[in-house]
Length: 433
Image 1 (tube, rainbow, N blue to C red):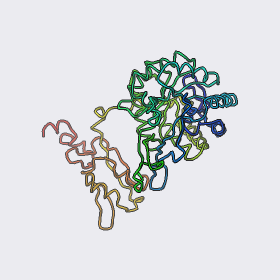
Image 2: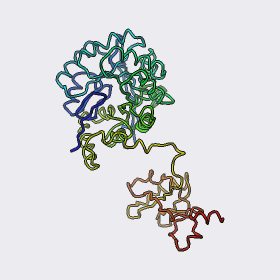
Image 3: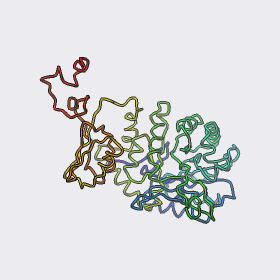
Image 4: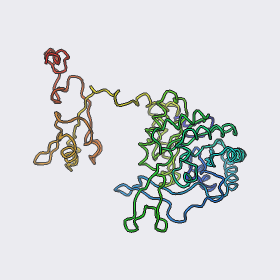
């Protein structure tokens, strides 16, 4: 079987699946249960020095659901840990002692001054923790106090604080980046200049998920008021993948280790992050939705996939897709595909027809007895029909071989090499026109 062991900036774990800094990693009880379930590591929920951190005692989460009530995204207004610093440090120490083979990284957020960092870092080192993650991403609560995303949105601050931390600890330093910024490369570059050993991303996205139309207040609602919070879960995965890829495909940062975060629910999600440059992944919402044992499916699924691909270690997977990430102007505009409907699978619902007829290219016909067929001459291969079809693989996109599409009409034609001098794909014939 494939070896899932992970070595992330010298931090070793039996697999690349870590729990992200969040409610699931807030205390010894949770983390022990996580390790027993099979998680390779955890990032302990963010510690700070403010003794006056007080979380709300009302709802802390807003949600977005799919039509089947499947949780697509969470918006949380929870702050960093509100438990005493020493209590957290004591628990980290005993858990690391009892699980020496698991990664134990501690998330930190303290004021943007060097002395607080000098104070807290030795205390974290004394626990035996493997590394620290600098929380420069939280968009609510702490940002109003000059921490979290208030630091992560200013590259100069990222570089400055990272330098302080590197100067005052022997532990590997991971900088957690906020997505609430225009160009993710800028904070990543700043972290690198400051000496960061790695970056992790993305942190939560600033959001309001819904409004109570009776109280006229954002949800979750606390005594008639609501606040913006941090959005996470499956819905943020596309944003996270893009930001990971942007860093990984930038030549100057190609060597920068990345811990991927954002909507990872299955082994496939994790594999996609790794293929785009992440060397491990962190999970939160999936564990909060399904429980800690979800990692077992992730482990077995990734292992089977790697076996099928002949990969012997996770290093074989990391960055495999990066060379194929490009900008639009470099795409092959001579590539042509057409939609094809499998009549044996079609349930005649008509969703493909409605979508194409009303909003796209009028490339699907409907007969009187509700048989739907693609009009090749009109099909531009946008694949909207594939995405709205409720039956998997009923509609597919098929690439056309050279000579099978008349570029003037878009119609599929058979190759006619006997009459190549007048063939529509012959450059000389085109020039003669």
